[in-house]
Length: 347
Picture (cartoon, rainbow, N blue to C red):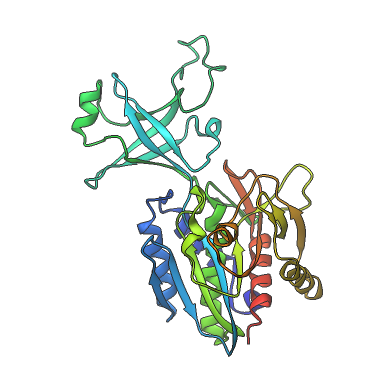
């Protein structure tokens, strides 16, 4: 496979770490798009951005006949300042669907509209066991979690004097870690893990001097977590979303495999295209699983709902604890790159 001959675990995980280090909740993605764009341009690819901020990398094919689309999203979950309390805490509203109880105690950054960045900690409003009877039992939700700012503030006026106001983004520290055993542990592997897979694939194609069989648009979307990332993708004949694979409950996928989704909340994916992906994996020894995702929607479904006449499918590395403290493994990411390479019929 291409990654075996020209790549390495280090290159893949390095690009993943570069993306994960950049705060990018939906609507606040300009910096991570700039990073992905630079990686693509460094390897001689032509790029463009849509009005809504999606990044499109155009890769000429060896022959005409149809146009292929790949998409991964670089937007993540986050929070936004909703209000400021009388004693100088920040109340927030969700951007996307983070599991709020997992945020209790997490470090964060607050970005103001005049370019200042402050640090803080997301905490229960009953944060001290020595003080509050309900420290262990108080709900961890939008009404009961707040941000403690790392500045000397004692009032709403003190916070406002810093330039912090409603509408400012609160970005959660991803705590990215790579283990010697090959695990990538971080928030927001959904979907920066798969975005890294596509960027590494572009890099490997450049150095191997190979091209896909058909003209291919590699798309990095910026509103997937809020439900409209795929609404403005270029028209293609086939669209393959490369997002996270689900792990847990009665699903068969592990963190060491590429998951092929047969159906999610929006219904089944294209039967012929899914079958083709399964056969490619099976025939070439790619470790894979086929699953039904119980609580999931992808950019493919959004593209379909906006009228795109294209076959569609969804694959991705198995990710444990999605929308919480996520984890995947190099093996699952490599299997994803291998299956995308086979799907593109590189040569």
